[in-house]
Image (cartoon, rainbow, N blue to C red; front, side):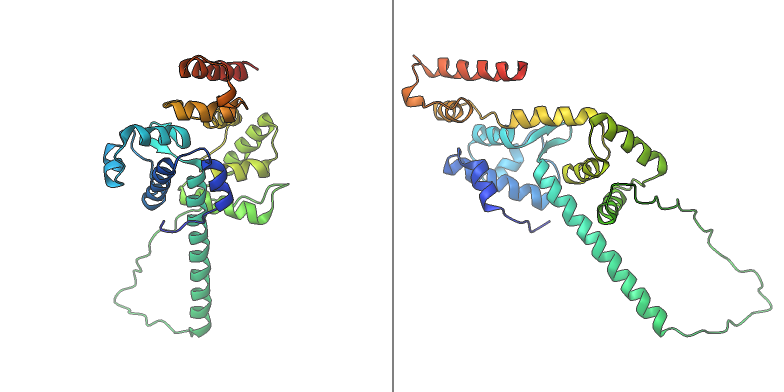
Length: 257
């Protein structure tokens, strides 16, 4: 994927606390992610070298803040959404093109009588593969959304059956979410399926993503300003260690609440 839509306001909002160098590193990592369409390795040394990120610690801080560490590497939920939407549009355009070509071919073709060779009466035919019937659009889900979901699942080579739909409806009820919201969540988050427990995990990850890094004195000041709503210049701490401890205590308190 060599193109993505750049939302200026969203970018400024998410990177306002970064220095110019930190923002440049983040942008390079985002560009690499879109171009490769795969997770950044858990050992990002070679990626940092390719992107000319000399400060390894700075690069790791950006990965920890904006990306999510998984067994396959560092992933970025927003990037995965855009990549999935890009391929869904490609698939839809491809289907439309094939349908148009087929209509043109049928319109121009004429019926031709076959020539029968009496010496060879055996006709070799490939066996017809049985295809699962298309599952009807569920109640409460728009036709457009359902078609987008079917295209998305096809790209994952995961057909939608009645059993799959029944499981999604069950998990949607457990999560107390409309089925349409569940389908949109699957597509936008790049998930293969859906479980109610994942929503709680996603909420926890979102809260963690809001927690700013505390690696340097400046980062501690920024975190105190954003997460605690205080002015570091007016704070009565004897050291940055005390300020950092206060921020961590506030995070623990929020998690308990």
